Length: 430
Ligand code: LRH
Ligand code: MN
Ligand code: MN
Image (cartoon, rainbow, N blue to C red; front, side):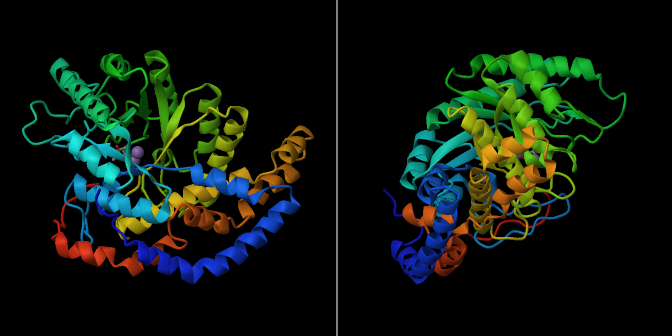
């Protein structure tokens, strides 16, 4: 068993400096919540159990199509990416699983990869296939599409790639495959919408047939990019049509950044839940498009509203467990810090949603009292739940202030010595 990346005494020292203030703040919040009949320990327990997966590609500095400005000590391969994910989990205690992207993370030996992850206290989340790029020595190009391509040979190649992702996933203990394709068109008339969607569905049926019974097949929609006129699975409507025509293992995946700026995402979430087709999330935040900014950094209220729907659903059906993952691109921050902070934002939204007085809310909704219904909902959002989040980390062996502790640990400087700088120009999300 390899040692965890951050020395235990650094965490202990940093926690000691903050423990007294946390205890005071936690007790004060506990008292405030008790007045409303809420047991803070029960909320803390729920928050502790609430985890979110991190994307392997999130630990490298991202980029735009204009440039990429790499940070120091960037991971050079999946093993180093796992080390960085190990730091995120060790300090934040909210991210115990990693989601792989193939072929970016294709392991030579899946068993070795699994052992490495286990040594860091990590497991694997959904597998992500990639038919939106051409790889070196690839036989057919995806320039004009992949699963919906006009050529049978290209579609077969894309299907085979997805089947390979399932095989790798089986070997490392994953339980889901996420398919996002960039297929679409750039010009009206370039493609026939109907025939293109038929080809996509036919290819997806071949993949679906090979999805193990205890797995889920997530389909991710995205409004545009790289195709700028039309995209095959452009919104939750096409996504819903696809999953319902495939079968019960297929579910819709909602990436928060993949909608038009004013779309009512929380309502989309509610609809998909109601009809049993919400599979999971890619959390991030955005201002203009698929900006992939840190979760909760632009519009934390919207994140809260999404969680309001999730908590509502959880109360109706305790077996409701959609998949949660961060999917964001870190261009100007240390990715480890962004991931820790973003996972905390997800937990914050969850805790705030748990604090909404649902009985009162329902009463005001039924009485057609919009002002009070809105007040009751916002009341959950206004509560500063940070002491709950910090206490959940502390109880789990993490850091009370994970970012300060990360900085104090000197991890980035240490890996910067061991990992030479990677290339800076060009575009890319990894
Ligand atoms: C597409 C996307 C999708 C990919 C990831 C790298 O924009 O959100 O989830 O797999 O980016
Ligand atoms: Mn995504
Ligand atoms: Mn995206």
